[in-house]
Amino acid sequence: MSDLITLPLHAVAHGRTGDKGNRSNISLIPYVAEAFPHLLEQVTEARVLDLFRHKGATDVTRYELPNLPAMNFVIDNALEGGVNSSLNQDLHGKTLSFMLLGEIEVTVPRSCIPAGSRYL
Amino acid sequence: MTVYIGSGAGFAGDRLDAGIPVVETLKKKNGPRYLIFEVMGERTLAIAQRIKMRKPEMGYSPYLEPYLRNVLKSAKENNVTIVANLGNANPLGGAKRTHELAKELGVKGLRVAVVLGDDLLAFMAADEIANLPTVEGVSIDGKEIVAANAYLGARPVAEALKLGVDVVLVGRTTDAALVLGPLIHEYGWGPEDWDLLAQGTLAGHLLECGGQVTGGYFCDPGFKDVPGLDQLGFPIGEIEADGTLTITKADDTGGMVTRATVIEQMLYEVHDPSAYLTPDVQLDVTGVTLTEDGKDRIRVVGAKGSSPPETLKVTVSADGGWLGESEMIYAGPNALARARLAADVVRSRVKSHGVTEPVRIEITGTGATYDNDASERERAKNMPMDGEYRLRAAIRTADKATAQYVNDEVLSLFCSGPAGGGGYRCNVTGQVNTASVLVPRGPVEAQARAEEVAP
Image 1 (tube, rainbow over the protein chains, first blue to last red):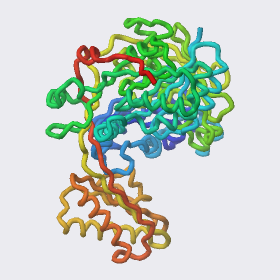
Image 2: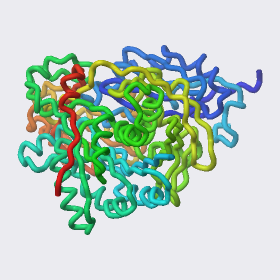
Image 3: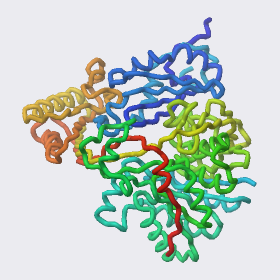
Image 4: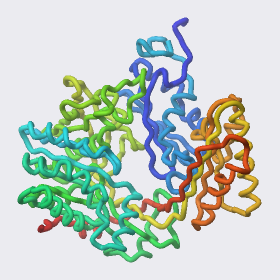
């Protein structure tokens, strides 16, 4: 298994954040479809909740779209009140997809990293 | 037949010239063609309502004129029908302004229709609205309601198009209704053609944010490269009678349409992808397949629909007090220590002044955006002392004076704080609080109507 590599999610996937009230959604889309089962196994609801708990997050639901493939995380109370009451300079939490991509690490076969990636 | 629907704006503040190449592309197409502008946010409506209270002829989008000025003449001359929520809190006022603009631009015979009936305050008592069940946002109990608008679906938009007009101005409808309305009008899709309505709603969802589906807000250099962001081409949807959708973009522009750009936008602001609720249909995108159909062309099929909820979503807005924000930058050797001392000084001053509202005092450059009000993560991190760090204070208050006071404390660091602070900036801005509530659809839909507005 020497071809396994541990890297931030950013090496393996991309995503976008949306907000509704105090709830954030972050999509997670692997660059290489082969990475999807590894993401399902490792990027769990519990890990994502741990990442956002300090902001007040109380619950995470992961929706799976295997035929794209992609997944969608819905994080309750992650936005410090959202646009109505947040004091964060990013009221909508638009930057949070890159927090997920940067701060969660995954271990995947090298073939899950797109050719030419600066992570390789 | 194919219906062509392009986007000219995905939010209030989008590029004013993006619609021009879209119209240039649409006019070469053989089939009904439309240009949509989506410029309404929850807060823009409340602000527009306030303006309308002072000046009854105003309250339409301040972007109506700058967006339409660029395309009105060519759209009319090339049979590109404009469907836009530029009506905001006052579609009738917007229609009048559109006629004036047409006259000014020498556009002859322009016909404009509006969709009305989304404004609950026109036919419901404020306390009745305040008692509706809240699903999202802050409680507006006891506050004066500034605006309460229901999200209408696509049917009234289709009715407006049936009048044979060149421009349809709506207030609060779903964003997707700007696209689904034309499709219902062109193809005669019935209220229970669930899968067709689902495809049309998905088309709307993909197009409503403009360049977000063509590589805008997507590019991550070295990872997700996008050519020509400075001339980003806005999207065009090509929709067949069976609902088959192809997403492409304006000719001779930058940007790109790939499976990845479409997937990111498809899941944008979606919660359960099997149950995206709209007044027209409940949309399920879990079975959608995306296939490349040439360069910058993605075919989208497989959306499933089912019957929509018995309620409509309403955005209720109330006064939200004031947000004060102020910043000072520290750079060079020991910058972080000086910024941290500045933060401590402001904290101490604000506390002894007796400010009771939470004040967030943070240092940009230390991961502040990902941190919380207490800067817990920053304290746990070992950051380099040298560099460039920006102090920021933020407070929300009911009175403007307290917000200004906190800003003034940051300003006073110039002479009384640590060495080398500079670049002070501040603002105090009025805020709107919003809540989403649910209203039974029957009585609201009875108010929804389309009418033509004469010059």
